[in-house]
Length: 284
Image (cartoon, rainbow, N blue to C red; front, top):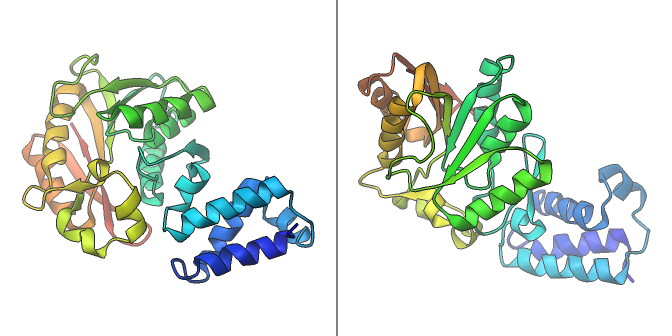
């Protein structure tokens, strides 16, 4: 039987071709925390402790998947987002830290308001509507998603935290079911925005494993989702309601212009923690 220290070394050695240090060390840490159910401090103190055969088998199986560059979140089956531990698999995109910034912006604006009506479009794993529902307990939150597989994951996440999000399965290019005109306070969306031409700059593990439907837009029409969602927002938002987009950093000004041209009273580009244009919001 291996000790925790030996197992950590085994993971790092096995995956270093795909993940150079310090990333290999961080991933090994995540795997051990997950399988052994110990936090960082407990693992540090228990380096010489022996690991049960079943846990060792699990770790080795996960390590093989990591060697094939499968993202660690899919290997573990969970990703962390705004204080929630969400279930994820190949049917949904892995939630990104930039998307937490969008949630944070909405919550700073609305944290003391009661009874808000909120819709998230292109909900995926449910990370945005679930984080909003968890932090705005009196809000009525909807999540719209075209993929049945993604919705199964989102529903499982809602059930895990007992969050009352109402899920709608629909293609955003069709009429939105079940929501009255001019009834919403907030619409959020992190739609597909990676250009096909940007594929060669992306890591293998994203291209091989994450759902392309949720990632890519055609080079010749990069704002196709933004245009349609802006149109829907004009119909569904109340006066002074707000639309929040996560965007491709190349298109901050274009998305802002799109909102103003569509008749929004004001629109603004917000940069992420790395100084990249990442969010555009507009007020009706």
